[in-house]
Image (tube, rainbow, N blue to C red; front, side, top):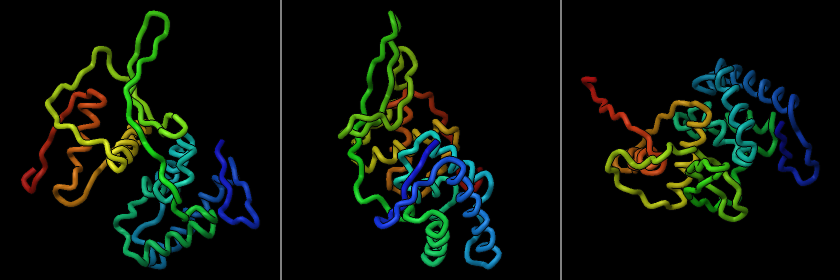
Length: 212
C-alpha cells in the first residue's frame, strides 16, 4: 500500500490504496475522452495503468517523480508541447501535485557488496541513495561472475547512474526496454556497461538496419 500527499500546503489530502487506484482509473478514462477529442495521440491503456501500479508497488518512492512513472507506460517523447500540457492537466485534475517535478535529485552511488548467510556468500550490484544509504535497486550476481565481453567502462556520473537505475527497475519489473535518441549520446554504451561490467550478463547483440 502506497500513499502520497498533494502538493497543496493549505490542504494536503492523503491518498492511498483503493482511493489512489480509483483516481488512476479515472485518469485513464479521461485520457480516452482526450484521445477521442484529438487532444492525445492515444489513450492510457489498461496495460499501461497496471505498469504504473506495479512500478509504485515495487518502488513507492517514485511517487515523487510521477511523470517519469507515467513515462514508463505512456510514450511522453512522442507528445508535442500542447499534448504534453493536456496530459499534465488531466493528471493534475485527478492527482493534484503529481505533475510537479522533484525539486531535488538524489545523489546516487553504485557499489558491489557481499552478503553472507552462514557459509554462503552472495554478491550484489546496488545503486543507492548516498545520503541516507537506502538501496534503490539491486541485482544478485552469478557466483564467480565476471564480465564476459570486453566492454568499455562508462564513468558513473549522476546522469549515467540515473539511467542505469531506470534500466534496473525495468528489469526487476520484467519490462522490455527501448532506448532511442541521437547517435553518439551513449545509449548502447550505458546499457552494455550495466549489463556486462556491472551485472556480468551474457549479451546477445543484434544489429538492426533496413535489411533486417
